[in-house]
Length: 404
Image 1 (cartoon, helix red, strand yellow):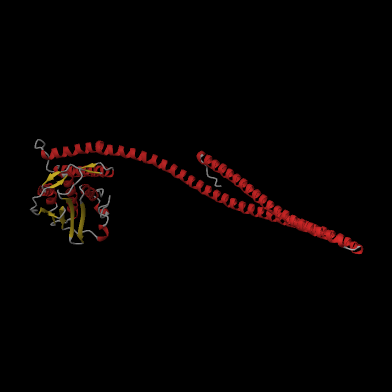
Image 2 (cartoon, helix red, strand yellow; image 1 turned 135 degrees about the vertical axis):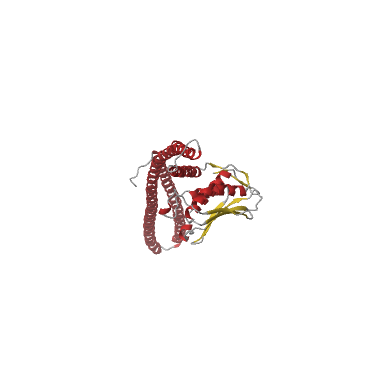
């Protein structure tokens, strides 16, 4: 048997099995002995009966022969009677010899039968021992396999418990990290953003012309930090299935117009033409407006990052059979084919020189669109720009109000 440890339950069950197997074998031995004894008894009784019948027949034949000879003896002459007496003596001797021969033959047959029975008993015992030996060997092998599997399962359980403890510690650390990010980190950064905005917009504070660009730089970087924090928190909400949507009816033209206004200054600063094509769509869409704006913000921000000066970014919307599609088309360099397959993955970026964020924008956008039961995709030709599109179900289709 394997040297792996056995549990008390396994040991008890095996003791029960061994006890049951021993009892069953004892019962089998007893049954075989009874069957053999009964068979031998019937055989002996049959042989004895046949021998008794043969002896009776022989005795009857002899008695008849003796009576016949006795009657004949009365009619014989004196000299013939002497000869008959001698003949009777020889007959008695022959009968005695015949009886002795029969007795010897019967003894030989009894010995042969006994020997045959012994051979059969030995053969049965040997076959039974072989069968039981094979059963014991199979049982031993099965128990060894069970011990190995139990030992492996025990090791896996131990490892799983250890990993669970690690995961518990990790989750606790992550919860603490998220608490720091969502409160302890975002609050002071938000305060810095508010102060920078107040210095730039409040006429009470006279900001020197040379100082203003530095305050604007502070504001832009603080804004980037806040966006990164929001991306991290959104990613965690998505991972935990806690991203809730506030679904209401909205006009797509207004949503696109707001996005153009939000990025107008950034586009102008980079000398990129940002515009929207009239949609002529009067049908409202059911969506979480803030989340759709977040998707558009990520798509427009990416387009601005890769579109060169004097380029263009155009927003548009179209109606499909089952969805309303919103498009963001740029005149940038396009996306290489080998990178098209992973741009929506977490932390995906097109290159080290493009690292202006964590690479979560497109991943979060995809998750937000899918939370609306929609889809996000891209079409791009190298050297001719890219068009990111997402489709949201039209109102006639049912939609869930939370993402799990």
